Image (cartoon, rainbow, N blue to C red; front, side, top):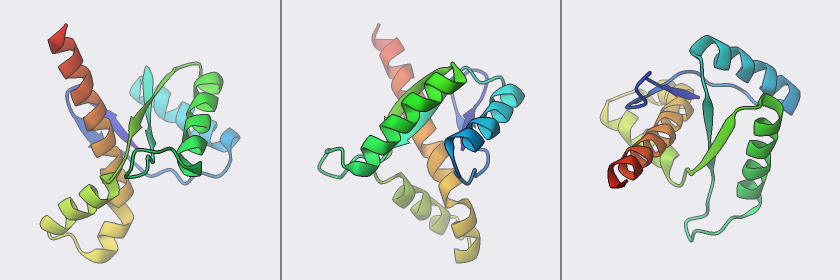
Length: 128
């Protein structure tokens, strides 16, 4: 999980939530939404390298729709292709030890996903 600053310019890793079931996920997310005053959630979609939506991508889309319905908050999706690889490479370059990388790679990947989304929104606004 990652959050942005109040100006929606930068993404920072926040924490890792171990998914269990939708009800428990909703409860955990509600706490974060309240604590950080969140008005939109971005869900990474694991699109295949060829751009197709396999089973895991369709599941993530369904999950995002369920979140939007249950949380009554805007839920957007973002292509998460290769974000884990990017995160792993960033951590290796930063000389983070293997055990520590395993613990934080998903948080870093979440911040990469969110940053991509934020940058895309900035580009769209600039084009308007």
